[in-house]
Image (cartoon, rainbow, N blue to C red):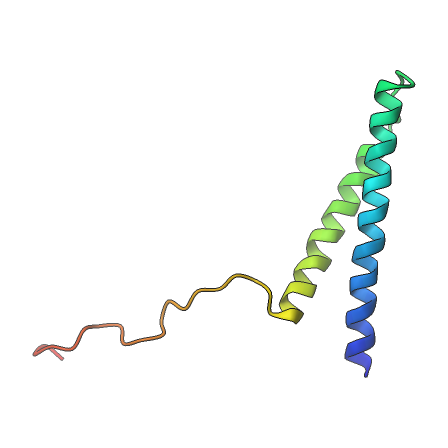
Length: 84
């Protein structure tokens, strides 16, 4: 029960951070090209949101088992032969 609540809350936090990141970057583009004056804080917020989305998204991926994997040691490491 607690794991399910935590899992859903982490996914919700990722969603909120992605929305904040998108709005922040749109405001940055708007301020640079329309207002011809750049907000000084938008890149710091975007960087912070991106870092949190990466780490929380990695946690969600681990929980779901969605990361790419490859079995390297699934079989015998040496072919069978007289030296075995």
